[in-house]
Amino acid sequence: MRSTVLFVLISASAVPLAGLFGAPRVSVAAVAGQTPAPASAPAPAADITGKWHFVYQTDGGDREMEADFKLDGDKVSGKYGGADAKGTFKDGTLDLAFPYNSEEAGMTSTLKMKGKLKDNKLTGTWQFADYDGTFTATRPN
Image (cartoon, rainbow, N blue to C red):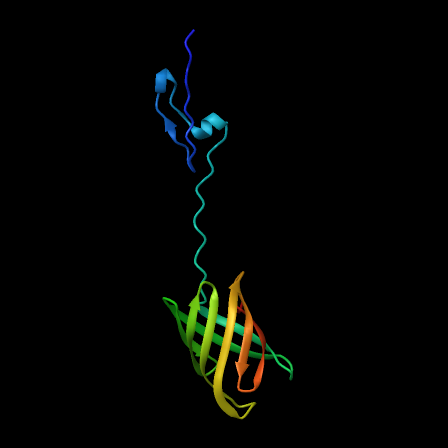
């Protein structure tokens, strides 16, 4: 009686096994009796480029603002209301600090925002002069 030795290689895709010792040409998927699963594409890198709708929680109630960001490497630029926004976005974390003129507060000061992007939503904290709070931002429909 003739015996057949079969070597199994583990891989993300079906790997042909050449006719070793007279064994028929077969793949890992065939050995397992399954169709090989397609290789999954890597998840796209998080990106904040584009338009955002911010909602700020304040002592005086919610405040809303529109922003439009551009990303060049980890450098963020763009418009926040009428102000020129600038900062960084790295590893899913947004860190902005730029001069902002608040007509409501009657002053110009540095607006600072730090937030995290998760599931296409930004959440974080903000500070402007003696004011601070939290925010959420989503992409407008």
